[in-house]
Amino acid sequence: MKQFRIKPTIQIFESCREFGDSFQIGAGDLLITSGHTYHTYLKEIDRGAVVIDLRKYGNGEPNNQMAESIYKDMKDISYNRVFAVGGGSILDVAKLFALENISPVIDLFDKKLPIKKSKELIMVPTTCGTGSEVTNISILELKEKNTKFGLAVDELFADYAVLIPELLKTLPYDSFAASSLDAFVHAIESYLSPKASSFSRMYSKMAMELLINGYRTIAEKGKDARTDIMEDFLFASTYAGIAFGNAGCAAVHALSYPLGSYFHVPHGESNYAMFHGVFSKYMALEPDGKIKELNKFLALQLGCEAGAVYRELELLFQVILPAKHLREYGVSKEHIQKFTESVMKNQSRLLANNYTELKKEDIEAIYLSVY
Image 1 (tube, helix red, strand yellow):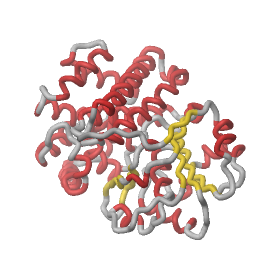
Image 2 (cartoon, rainbow, N blue to C red):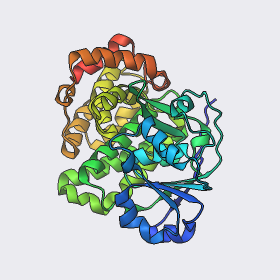
Image 3 (cartoon, rainbow, N blue to C red):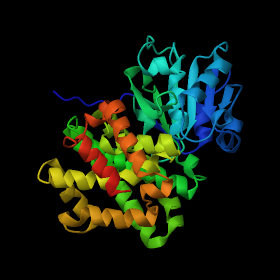
Image 4 (spheres, rainbow, N blue to C red):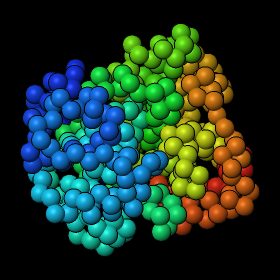
């Protein structure tokens, strides 16, 4: 039996002012965001919320130490609603603050603490990649384990996922590129997941179609062309989030996590670094399964033969964000062995969603293929 659900209520506003008028952010609210986003978009609509600037607690990918520091500052402050306005780091951290028990964060992720939601949660993305606003997953780097780890429980679902295209207007190009490629990986991995259903695959396909069309527009007209179609990328990210929230992500994410943890490569970029290696291995191991159907769909979007889709995707993605080999991030062959061991030990939740089984030697071979 397979199921499909969309848990948060999704609302769309043309501007932050409309959003502010509707939600009346103020006393009794916790607002987690970045200083830039707050001063550019939110200051005028804030009527007295407690504001947390995540970047004051550290830069880069979110980790349990950041969350612990925020908890230390917040544990004696009462609030009823949590607003998260930002990229994936902000959304993933903010989800924890809707729970009754937060610290120690590492115990929370190991499910040693009772998990109970006690606050209303409103998620507002400012990038077009993570889809976290519609999922029940929080992903943090756990410093003690030297890897990223996901907590996936229904208590982390938002009550409202709010989409405001205006918030993406100041998104830097590199952040746009990495985050939207992350959305593509969400869509394609969830399409091939054994947990996928006809409904989740519909959302995967809608996301991939919007993203490919958007990328082709940028390839033809230049980087600035994204401005007029940013809403498409925002919706594609949410569609992909709905798809992977139901079907799960798999080996691309699992293999990217050590790269992000060891070398602090942004999440979308680390997924991009692993994408072609994983899908080349899938094609070598099981070319005639569900991936054959996927390739026909991609061929229609790309205007090529089914056998050429991954080469065409590689060429298209190169226009959006030039790819790097792992060695360009500082990865050594000794790291590859550590990465492989880490994935096998810590990422069983993701590996369970693989299109086909990947053994230890397959994972090591994927790393070497993109080294």
